Structures are given as C-alpha cells and as structure tokens.
Image (cartoon, rainbow, N blue to C red; front, side):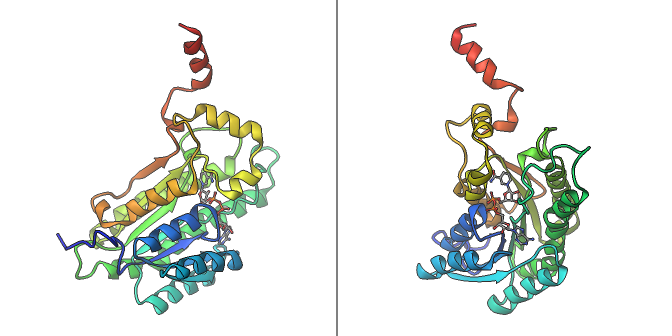
Length: 279
Ligand SMILES: NC(=O)c1ccc[n+]([C@@H]2O[C@H](COP(=O)([O-])OP(=O)(O)OC[C@H]3O[C@@H](n4cnc5c(N)ncnc54)[C@H](O)[C@@H]3O)[C@@H](O)[C@H]2O)c1
C-alpha cells in the first residue's frame, strides 16, 4: 500500500463540493480542506460560497468559490474545467447540491405542478449525472500510476428508501441518484473510480431549520434512535471517510446517516411509550 499522510489524509487531493454555500456542503468543504484537500466550492449562490471559501483560506487552506447552475450543462462543464485548470487535477467529486426550494409542493401527485417534478429531476438527478459525466475522465486520470483513484460521493436521502406522503418528486429523484451511484460504481470500478452515496436523514442545516414545521421536527425526533438530530458536520464526516483512501474497498454503497430513523420497525414512538408504561 502507498504511504499515507496520517495528519493530512487528503493532502495532494483536489475536491469539488457542490451546494457548498451553506449547510452540509459548507461543513463538508471545510472538513475536506482541514484534511488537506484543495476544495472548489460550487453553488448557484456565489456570495455565500465565497464567504465559506474565505473561511478556509483564512485558516491556511486552499479553496476557490465558483458559480454553478446544475440545470445548465455548460455551467457544469465550466466548473470541472476551472477546478482542473486551477488546481491541476480532480480526485473527489461530492455531489451535494439539490434544489430544495420547492419545499413540500410535491406531496400530492394529483395536484402537483409538473414544473415542480421537472425542476426537481433537472437539478437533483440530471445535474448530478452531468457532474459525474464531466468529472469522470479526470477521476479516471487521478488513479493513473496510483493504487487508489478518484471518488464520487452522491447525496441521496433516507426518504429514498421507503414510501412517504410528503415529498414524492424529491424522494423519487433521490432514489434514482442511488441507482446512478451503483451504475457508475459498476462501470468505472475497474478504471479506479469509486462511487458511493450518503443518505442523510433530517439534518439541522440552516435550510432545514428554516423550512421545517415544528411538528415535523418532533415526529422525526421521536422516530430517531439517537438522542439528537444530525448536524451538517455529521454528514461531512461521512463524506470525508468515503472520500479518503481508507475507504478504498468501499464502492457502490449507500451510507445512511440518519440516527437510525430508517432502520427500525414502523411506529417506534408509540411502542416506546407503551414500553415506558410497562408491557
Ligand atoms: N438537511 C436535511 O435534512 C437533508 C436530509 C436528506 C438529504 N439532504 C440532502 O443533503 C444535501 C444538502 O442539503 P442541505 O440541508 O445542506 O441544504 P442547503 O439548501 O443548505 O444545500 C443545498 C445547496 O444547493 C444549492 N443549489 C440549489 N440549486 C442549485 C443549482 N441549480 N445549482 C447549483 N447549486 C444549487 C443551494 O444554493 C444550496 O446551497 C441536499 O442534496 C439534500 O437533498 C438533506
């Protein structure tokens, strides 16, 4: 095995994090930079992405913010070219961005505007696929002459695992992201590229906190097995693991980071109350 730098495990690696202006993406970009990677922070919201990049460079890290619109293939191609042009290579693609502006407007298929479905799939699935498409030649190259090569981490959701009544388009787009992940792992594994997905459960990013009705938070909290809900840093650590050479034998996998919410029998909250009262 190649010698590892245990203090900066991602030293000499170049990463792109999409949706890095805030929330999970910002926490991930900061953590990857702390571990030694040069990070390109891509987001449709450029100014907040620049602010996160400045936080990284202020502490001595390497970072660049780039405006990205995942609905536009030319913008995605330009992002990859800028990353490789600036830092010389590409090792890690963290597809974190999603368009969450539709909120719960996709709850009911009968009344849902088609544009909600189309926009959701355009950004969350097509955008993720296009980022993979344009990054893959560079990720293959990253593995040439090395034991371990490039890596993609796609972002799905635990809502992609079960039927639910709140987000039909969103959860379908995320389920498709999981299958895309497996396809790329299969097609590019022998060329040195690993591809995995993280599946967050409810995570207290600013976006989630802003849009989350208090009742919904209570329900999820009662179904979560940990004493707390997740924070952006919890996802950042999962991504950093999958991005690292320590995960060299892990590909085509879904890492669910949801405090166990999706692992247990349905309706655990009333069962918990019953057990507390005595069986
Ligand atoms: N927070 C949660 O509870 C939760 C749960 C499950 C899955 N996720 C997933 O985690 C990821 C991050 O979520 P978050 O909670 O940090 O939300 P967030 O809103 O902070 O992050 C999403 C980012 O994507 C960017 N974006 C939106 N449309 C874009 C486009 N067209 N082009 C480029 N960038 C665009 C936004 O500007 C934003 O910065 C998303 O993929 C989301 O679906 C989050």
